[in-house]
Every structure is written in structure tokens, then in C-alpha cells.
Length: 334
Image 1 (cartoon, rainbow, N blue to C red):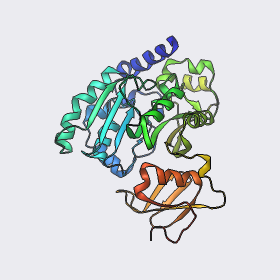
Image 2: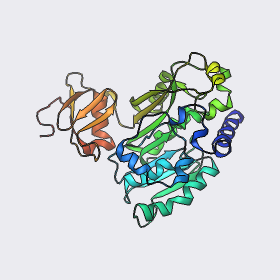
Image 3: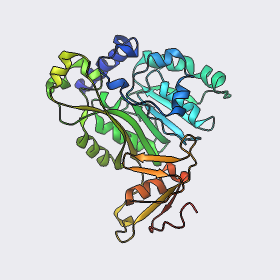
Image 4: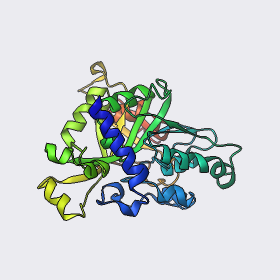
């Protein structure tokens, strides 16, 4: 517990006081992902400058087609992703940000009401910002089965107890919900020297798990087969830090973890599965990428594996897809 508290204190100080703006970062870990979708980029341009200047993340983990949904943001920081999500879910939806750094929370709270009323034209803010630890969401007042999408941007790796984070997210998500997030991972297990370096902790490097270890934790927490949506290499700028990490290679990965029932009795080895995307998500009218290996062209049925079919049939994406559990292609998207 003392070690976990020390890690949290170090990270909170790094993001609240040491870094004054995102250009102070010493690696590309917290800003290394590709360009966000044009819909998201357009929203980012409307967000107050102070919010974006003090935001640190390694991607833009914001799914489209989420109007009316309930969002939870882990380690929301100054709130950039929450502000964009507020626009995506609309007045019928809600966004809750959880962070442990007072300086960051105060920035988010200061701008939320005006952004929702003036920029988005809402009657009131649909955002709430809560002080808390992502391993202890229940203590922060986050109830079970109360969110449709949980997002996180380069934060899980800052946690001293990643399996606890995954268990808490699984508990907070409603059936069919998704953990959609970007973070830093490694191709090998890191040495204690790397793990104890405070700068590398703050930069998301020292806390990064080996990819296979993380995916095993996700499955243990209850999530259905982890999906990688995007993956890009990370550059470490400082020579002394590069020497410390040695041959280890680091990647920014956007993961998708779904809370859907994939119990064995649903398995029908005899019948293949199929799904068809309706083209109903704004900004993705022509095609939809579920993960690196699964891309749906609108109105073209695609054979998929059992888990993919159950994710699309039982998850929040179900209104955007026709799914056949009997492998019938002809009747889909007819």
C-alpha cells in the first residue's frame, strides 16, 4: 500500500506541478498516436486552450456513434477527452471524469459549464468531474453497471495496480459496455531499474506491461477477447533514458475491451457467424473498423468469429449492425 501511495504521489506531482504544458514531455508516449478522426479533430479545435495545453495523452480514444450514451473517463486530467465526449453524446448523454490530481480537476471544472452552454448550446453541462483513484472507483462513488463506455488516455500504465483498474472498469460498465482506451505497452518485461525511474513512470514508460501480460489480465477481469484498434511505436527523446530501457520496444496501443456474455454454451462450431455494418455512424458512413483485423464495408456482409458476432449483437454497437448467428449472409443488410 505504501509503494502504491508513493507511485500515485509521484505521478500526481509530475502531472500537476512538474509539467507546465504538453511540450515538456521527454518521450513521445503521451502524444504519439496518429491524427484523430476528422470529427474528433474538429471538436478538439473548439475546446478551451487551457484545457488542451495541460492535457497529456497518447491518442484520441473516443468512439463515434455514441449519442445518448454514458461515458466514464479514467484519469481525465484537464478534461480534453471529456469535453469532446460531451459533444459526441449530446444533452441526452453524460460524461464523468475521474482524476487524482487537484490542479487538473480544477481546470476541467472551471471551463465545463461555459463550454456546454456557450459552445455546444446545451441548457447545462453534461460533465461531472470527481476526485478519486482509478483502482478504487467504488470509493469515488462510481456505481456498478452504470456506464456504456469507459475511456482512458495514457493513464492505466500510471497505476500501481492494473488488474484492480480492469476489475473496477468491468464492474462500472453496464452489460454490452466497452473499455475503449489508449496506453503504452512493451514487447518485454521491464527491469526494476526502469520501473523505479520517476520520470519514466510519469511518461507512462516504466509502468508499461508486456502486451501478452496485459491481455491476460483483461480476460481474467471478465472482458471478451481484447481487440487492438491502433498501434504505433514510441520514441524516447533523452539518451540517458534510452540507455536505461535498453532493447525494450514500446508501443502506443488503442485497445477495445467489451463486457459481453460469451459463455461456452453459445458456441456453435458447426455454424459460422456473419455481420453487416449499416453505415449509420456519422463520420464512418462508408466503412467501420472494429479492430486492426476486422473492417466492415457498409452493406457488405462479412463472416466473423463467434466473439466478434457476440460483441456486435450484445454490445453498444448493436444498433449499427445486423448480425447472424447462423452464418446467413443473404438476409443481412437487405
